[in-house]
Image 1 (cartoon, rainbow, N blue to C red):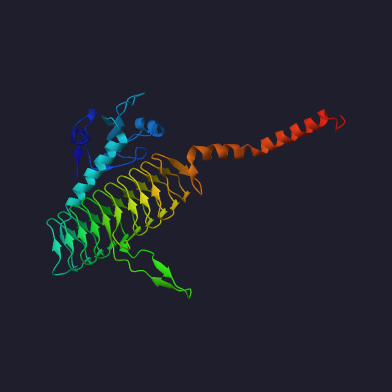
Image 2: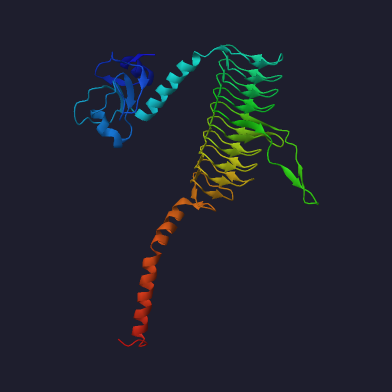
Amino acid sequence: MQFSAAQIALMIGGKTEGDAGITVGSFGRIEEASSGQLAFLANPKYEDYLYSTNASIIIINDTQELKQPVAATLIRVPDAYSAFAILLDQYQQLATQQLVGIEQPVYIHEKTTVGEHVFLGAFAYLGEGVRVGNGCKIFPQVYLGSNVTIGDNTILHPGVKIYHDCIIGSNVIVHAGTVIGADGFGFAPQADGTFKKVPQIGNVVIEDHVEIGANTTIDRATIGSTLIKSGAKLDNLLQIAHNVEVGNYSVIAAQAGVSGSTKIGNGVMIGGQAGIVGHIQIADGSKINAQSGVSKSIKTPNTAVTGSPAYDYTAALRSQAISRNLPELEKRVKELENMIRILNGNVKV
């Protein structure tokens, strides 16, 4: 697909500088892009490449000042990074819209309902009572258990497994290998030291505009629903336990784990490898640093924490600064102690 600078500017609400008729057919990083490609500049560290790149079109910020002539056609926008993201999204949608039809072999139960303009990849399995909305893209080896509901325009990448009774909203993206609706980790200890499995009879509900990375697991609720609310973004390799709730537009980075029945508020940011215990609440707007261990509720909105156990981020930075100065402080204390002994006459000079 080829697009002119004028067409691209219209898509992202930008203004062109240079040849508005020049066309591009692919994307490239500004430091290595070639003729016929589009690049963007958002990070000042890469500004020098603006004058040396071979890219045909470059998206830049409105505030970007030019220090010398630029060979490429420029498209100025308020935020180059966001504009580039919008453009990539539209490009991807155009590419996926071409995928329509049913490859073979595919298993579709006679009581399954499939909407219009749907793509079903080879070896997909759609169980009894499954409902697939319009415009969905279901790639090879996806498994949908009985009574699963998939909303419109949702994309399930290869090997996604969704257990029975789970509900996936519209415009959701689930990447390869993710498992949604496996049993929560519920076992009751017995008097003889064994563990009795607690049946997990709930489900998982994923609301609209959620994206879930590859090889993430979201367990079904014991009773009720494990809930991922609209706009949340989950990275690869996450563990979301039974009855957890993740709020609107919250983001969780790779290798983090959230224990059962924890409620995460709206707009929360959780760094990679963070661990959160069960049955606590995380207030709206909280920020949890990477590798933090959260052992109690965060009740004040917009709180930032770090460490294990996690505590206030600013206080942690002060503690780290003090820790780095401890050798010097120890030296000064010894000097003061020596001076005191001298003043007391305990040491002959």
